[in-house]
Structure formats: structure tokens, C-alpha cells
Amino acid sequence: MTQGSRTTPARRTVLGAAGAAVLGSAALGTTTAQAAPRAAEAAGARHGYRSLPVPTVIAHRGASGYRPEHTLGSYQLALDLGAHVIEQDLVPTKDGHLVCRHENDITGTTDVADHPEFASRKTTRTVDGVALTGWFTEDFTLAELKTLRAKERIPATRQENTLYDGRWEIPSFEEVLRWAEQEGRRRGREVWLHVETKHPTYFRELGLGLEERLAKLLRRYGRHRANSPVFLQSFEPSSIQRLAKLVDSPRVVLLSAASSRPWDFVQAGDPRTVADLVTPEGLAWIASYAQGIGPTLDLVIPKDAAGKLGSPTTLVRDAHAEGLILHPYTHRNENSFLPADFRRGTDPTAYGDSFGALKTYLATGIDGIFSDNTDTALLAAADLAGRTEG
Image 1 (cartoon, rainbow, N blue to C red):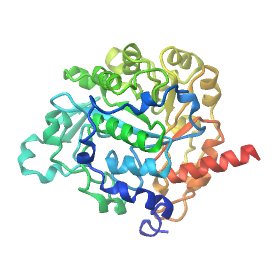
Image 2 (cartoon, helix red, strand yellow; image 1 turned 90 degrees about the vertical axis):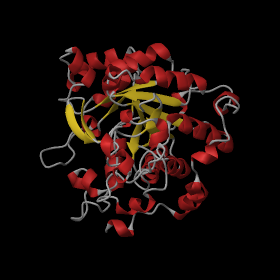
Image 3 (spheres, rainbow, N blue to C red; image 1 turned 120 degrees about the horizontal axis):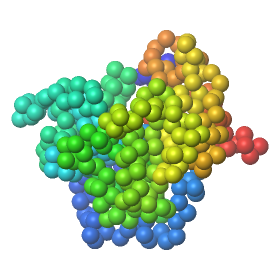
Image 4 (cartoon, rainbow, N blue to C red; image 1 turned 45 degrees about the vertical axis):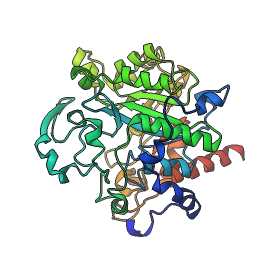
């Protein structure tokens, strides 16, 4: 089955999202931070992150399997599809605003290369030890970024998503907070967010520290408490430790490949790797300042040399023993992203046995999962619940 014949979400969800497709920043302008009632505050007593459905389906950069990532269109569709939590990645602008992009390098996710007025901004920067050439958010003001339009990051894999190229702007995080309030009032329930600080050590060295700016916005919108509908996440433990001193919002340490070292560890000369952090001792250390971990799925179930799933590790059991929740990343439907034993056919962009892979991962007892395909993950979670209740 080729991509052109199978990526459309169910008709019910498409109809639910149709009205939201025209949502833009202008529609949010009528709701100001000073005058808008707080949906989170009006909701009264909260129950916090432990009240979320398990497994929790986290929309990875929104509904990025169907819309260009980190756009209001992607976030809105994910919410309409039923995602329990919507993810944002944060990077700063030159004038200190936080915007939603997976990376500060916006070469592949915007039309910046088509703007001759910004041609001279193309440069080479070394981010976390890697030299990159392109355009970077820290070289633009928010007003300048607002003249750009978002586009699909991996068009060769998700060619249908290119239909929406140019439709949405880069959203600021404050716009997303206003959007979440607006949707919370409309739906009569809190809209949960999962917010990542990207390259925090790099930006702090530029004088653009993320944590203080993020904490200020969280306090302004009432999402700074232990039971607030938000998770704060980072691949750098020191960023989470810094946030723990600023706000009480639930916090998650992201964990990459076992052999890798967080960049703040590299900068500080800390010899520990992720393999050290997923030991019982490492997890106890994380639990002293965070409520969860976000491991790569390979840390939950490793792959063998052929790319097939092996046996689960003890990570779920060990993390739960320390009171930590697990939100692994990332599930995607396409063959190229699935374990080898769940691929179907030879087209890397076609959908494989995504439900089979999800069944295997969810059976380990993880508390949630990041997914580019919200509807697929929700159906798999419902299947698991049905088996459990049966």
C-alpha cells in the first residue's frame, strides 16, 4: 500500500477537524493573557498527571503524521483526534520569545530559503557539538519569524503533508497557551501540554536561557503547579533541575541511546551515559527531581542486529519502583520507522503493522507513548484496555 492511498484519518475525525483547519493566529488575538479567564483555574480542583488515561497518548509535535509539525493546524488536529497530551518543542528568538520548532535550525521546516531578505542570515553554527548550516531562530526576531510559513519536514516520506505547506505560521508558545485555554473552555476540560526545552545549555551560553522564560509563561497562565496540565521535558537533566527550582509542574527527563551522553554532561565533564541513568541508581537520582522519564523505545525493547524487536529490558519495572512514569518515544506508522518485524512490503513510506508494534510496546507496561499518528495509538490503547478488562 502506498502513501497516496492510506494516510487519511477516519472520516469522523476529519469532519471534527474541518472547522479548525482555518485556525490562525488572528483568531487567538482576541484572547489576551491579561483579560482571558483561565480554563485551568476555572476547572477547580485538579487531579494531576496521575489522572490521565494509561497508556497516555502524546501527540508528537501535534498530529505530525498528517500535518506539518509544530503548527496550530497540527496541534488542533491532534486534539480533535483525541490525543490526551500535545507536545511542543521550544527554541528562542533573537528578542527572547519562545517559539515552537523541533530545532532552532528552521531550514527544513519553513520557507525561509524563499525569502531573499533573509539570504544573508544563512550561517553555520555548532549546536551541541554538531556543525549545521542554515537559518536559526536565534538570528530572527519574533516579528521576522512571523513572516515565514511552515512546511513539511520530511516531504519524501510524507508527501501528502506537503498539501499544507505554507498554511500556518510558526506559533509562539504563548499563542499555544492561549489556544489551549480557548480549547479548554470550549471542551470543558483541561488541554494537556508536553513541553521540551531544546538545547538549553547552548542557548544559555548565548544569553537566551530557556527555563526562566518558560517558567514566567507557565506562571502567567496558571500552569506552574504540581497538578497543572503540563509536563516539562528535556534531554538535559540540568534543565529539569533548574525548572524544578522555578515551578512545581511535573517534569520528565528524556533519554536517548544508551551509549549517548546528555550535552550538559559533556559540557560539565560528567562521564555518565544514558546507560548509567537507566540503572536503579540512576533512576533514583532522576526521581529526586523529576516525576518521569521519556526513553527512546529502544531502551524499553532493544532491537537485534536485523532491526527486529528482542526481549524487554527491566526499565519499566525499575522506573516504576522509583515512582517514575514512562513516556517513551516515538511511534510512527511508516515502514521506515517501524521495527523490521513489523514492516510490510518494500515501500519505506507505506504503512506497516503499526498496531502489532504498538501492542508489543504497550504490553511492557509503559505509562504512555509519543506518536505521530494519534488515531492509531488511541486505537491500540483501546485494544489494550479491552484485553485488560476482558
